[in-house]
Amino acid sequence: MRKSVLLGLLIALVVAALLSPFACPYPDGLERVAEDKGFLDLAEGKELIHVPMPDYKFPGVSNEGLATSLSGIIGTALVFGVMYFLGRALAGTRRLTSSSSMQGKEERRE
Image 1 (cartoon, helix red, strand yellow):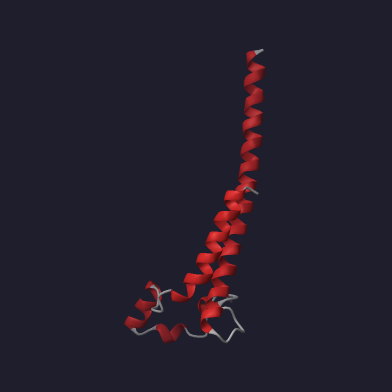
Image 2 (tube, rainbow, N blue to C red; image 1 turned 90 degrees about the vertical axis):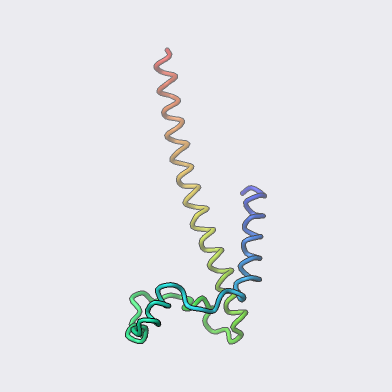
C-alpha cells in the first residue's frame, strides 16, 4: 500500500476520532420531518435493520464522547477497507482488460 494512502487513512481516522464528538446533536432531515409532523414515535422500536452502532454511538461505552469517537473510527476504517478492496478488484479487472486489448492490437499489427 502506498504511503500516501496510509497517510490519508491516518488523517481520516484522526479527524473521525477528534471531530465526531462535536457533530451536530440535532436530528437529520428525515428524523426532523418525522418529529415536526408528529409521527416519529410510530417508528420507535420497529427498526427494519438491526445496526451495530445505533445513533452513531459504540454500544457498551458509558462516556458519550468516547462512544461517538469509537464509532467514527470504526466507520471510517470499514468504509476505507471496503473502498480499498473494491478499488483493487476493479483495478485488477481493468488491468486484465487493458492487457488483453493490447495483445489484440499487437496481433493485428503482425
